[in-house]
Structure formats: C-alpha cells, structure tokens
Image (tube, rainbow, N blue to C red; front, side, top):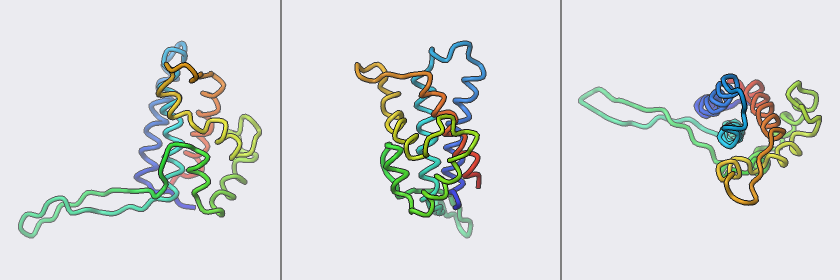
Length: 157
C-alpha cells in the first residue's frame, strides 16, 4: 500500500495547519468550521493519495534546456469520505480497516468505515456551517483530528 507523495504532502499540510491552530488556540470554537474543513479535506486527500499517479509535464523548452513540473492526479472524485474510501481496491480497504481496528487513534473504537460514514460530508458541511442544518460539534473535531493523524501515520511514503 503506497501513497502518492505529492498528494500525501498536500494532505499533511492541511492537517499541519489544523494542528498549529489547535495548539495556538484558547478556544477552538472560534474557528471550528475551518478546523473541521481542513481536517476533513486532509482525510479526503490521504485517501485519494492511494489511487494517484505522478507525472511530469514539459513547461518550457529553450534550446536544449527543458523545464518540467511534477503533477499528481487521482482517479477518485468527490468529497464524501466513505465513497472515496469505497472506491479504493478491496485489498487496500481491508488493510486499512485492519490497521485501524486497534489503533491508538481509533478513539471511537468503531470500524474504519463507520467512522468515515459518521464524518462523511464534513468537508462540505463545515464550509457551510452558517446554514441552518449544518451543526458542528467538538466531538466531530476530535474524531476528524485522530482520523487524519491515523492516515498520516499509516500512509507515510
């Protein structure tokens, strides 16, 4: 099970920002929506890193000099965490589920797919927290934080 380093690094940057904010905050409530959105997006990207390919694109050619940029792309689309996870090959799903079962970051003591379903649409709902039916909770924040840390640690390239 190998993650794509470009997408993994972007996922880690969203987690790192959330962790920095949490460390500096007196009350997380003042930025709960942004905190949850960053964490949910990092989880999404960690999952997508498992189905991604890297490639180089020629940006500029001057004489014999060629300048390339690295890119990565995943075939998994959308923001719903359980759907992204269910798009992965069964072997990868099973391996991650097995690792999560007794992992220190499994704070809910639930199967991985259940945890993903419980925070499934938080990237969208956190961004639109001001809408009537979108309720954010501190418990969800803890679950998102520990779930993001699980993927970071288990998928490290």
